[in-house]
Image (cartoon, rainbow, N blue to C red):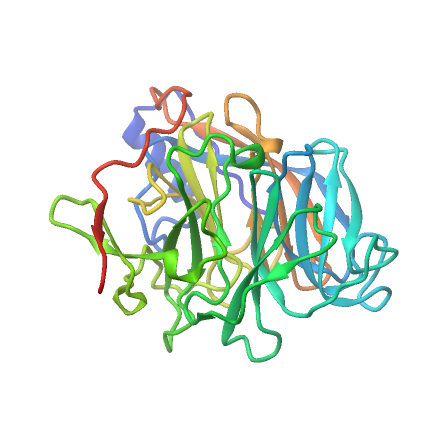
Length: 365
């Protein structure tokens, strides 16, 4: 059984956080200090559900039709298996509530509405203004990436060329609410592990105007912080700097979403070669990051990845949520589990996210 992070409110705050971390055994290895807002997570292991055996990854977005759309890799999707209906890349529609969902294959997979028309793997989807966007990494070589868009809820896709190279070849889009509701500015943010490095220990960040997602030249790249701590954005991809670093390593499958109930950006990422992973939070898409939970093992020793949250399945106050994840067998599937954030006393009240301020633009010629 995996460890639980539980806060005891009777203790002073500093002691509370210390004891929470010491009892889980993760304090020594987490790359960032404890969150000032979230003191831990309680998992309801009895809520664990599995579907779509043989299909993994599952980045997702909440579209204007009220449904979630999620992509998978190397399987038949819902109702299929590792061999039945197997495609390299498929997209499914997920309807219903957090614990009563129903998945339907739309693009590829077993008994899908339409067959898949291209291969690859997707690191992220985003729904904006009635359009779905999906990043796709080139199959087998994994060196290049492109962005595709659909105006008919994932049935057909129009794609750019292979415009993206490492480390931005597998973009994972930051998600907000339904059809991108609640975004504080006009940008879409996207992340990826720094696969251009010999040893992957960092995550990189890009942004693009929401109406220019298909335009490669409109993207800007996080190039570090200025002396006042404000982000620097450059149109020169060679100027990128890490937006997140973990010396223990990072793997594919980063997920980032905004929790409006607690006004924090939540980033999840597996680390190392085992079943370890972490959840981190920040007031801005670029940080500064703090640690919500950091596991050396979770549920069991089987490696897992792609830990995704969605505002559709969050409670009104932002503390309750349903998480989707996958991994190696038996978690090579669509898996969901219920969780609850334990908040630090006097944490910031709910409200809309503030518009990112103090942005410094460094546009290269």
